[in-house]
Image 1: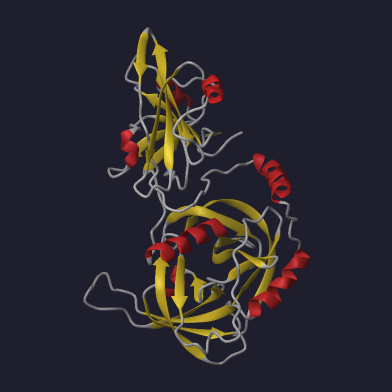
Image 2: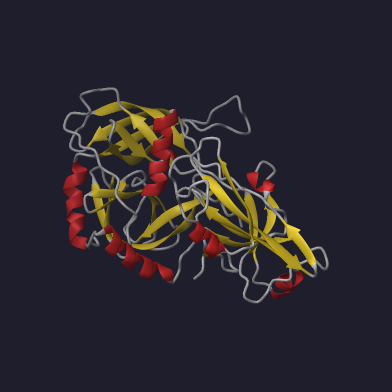
Length: 401
C-alpha cells in the first residue's frame, strides 16, 4: 500500500531499530506553515523539558517546511538522541488529506458548516445548474491515433471519441486528460450551435486526469460564460452533472447527491488521489463535464464503477486548483508530491509482537522507500508511522479517532 503525502503535512514516526533487544524511539513532527523560527514559552511548557532541538528546513520552492522536535528516548538504560528534519517538496497550497476520516466525518461536517457560514445545497439548487451550464459546457470531438507499442514505427488507425468540457476563467476549457489523450486534433462545439471550432491542448495532467484546452477563434467566445470553482461538498449535498453522454447529441443533466469522499484509484493515470463519489449517472461522454453544486463547480466527472449502479466519481476542487495553478505558474503540469513510501497494515498480531508494538500503538509499517525519496533522510525500512498531521493512523492504514 503506497501512502502519498501532498501539501503541508507532518508526521509522527516510531523509529524501530528493532534488531533483537532494541525498542522504539519516538519522534514528533509538526507543520511549520504558521510557526516562527523560534518557539514561545507557552509552547515549551506544553512540549515539556525533553525537547532537545528545534530545527526548520524549507523546500527548494519555499512553499512548505517541516518542524522537528527531537526527544531523548531512554530504553533499557541506553539514551538515544536523534535530530532529523523531513521536508515535503510540495508546490502550491494543495493540502489533500490521504485519510478516510470515518466516524469523525459527520462531526467535522457540522463544524465546517458553522465555521464556513454556508448552508447545505439541496436538490432544488440543482436546477440552477441547468441555466448556468448551457452557456458554459461544450462538447469535445477528439481524433486520436494511439501508438503501436509492438511496432513503434507505426501508429494505430485513427478513431474519433467524444467528451465534455467547460469554460473556466482566462478563456480556457477544462476537461479530462483521457478525453484528449493521443489526440491528432481536437474540435469543440457550444450548446445550441452547429459550428465546431479548432482547439489546442495547452496542458495535460495524466496523473490527475485533467487537461486544459484553448480556442483561438474569437467567435467561439461570444456569449460564453465561465464557471467558478466552489468547495468540497458535504455528504448528501445535491450536485448536477452536466455533459454530453452517449445516447444523444444534446446536452444532458443528471442529478444526485454526494455519497463518499475519499482517496480513489484514478483509472487513467493509475494513481490514487482524492475523489468524490456521487450517485448521479456518469456515462461515456460525460467525462470532463462539471458537477455543479449551487452556482459553482464541485468537481469534474471522470469515471464510474463498472458492474455497479449509481456509483460515479468526480475530481474534487483541491485537485483541480492544484493542476490549474501549476499550469498558470510554469506553463506546464507540475504533478503531485509524494513521500515515495510503500506501507503495510499492522493488524497481524505476530507482526506487532515482532516489532514490539504496545497494545495502544496503531500505525503502518514502512515496507519500502523509493530510491529517490526524501524520506531516506528520516525513515528506514521497518519503521512504524504512527501519525500524519496529528491524525493517528489506524492499523489498517486509515485515519482514526
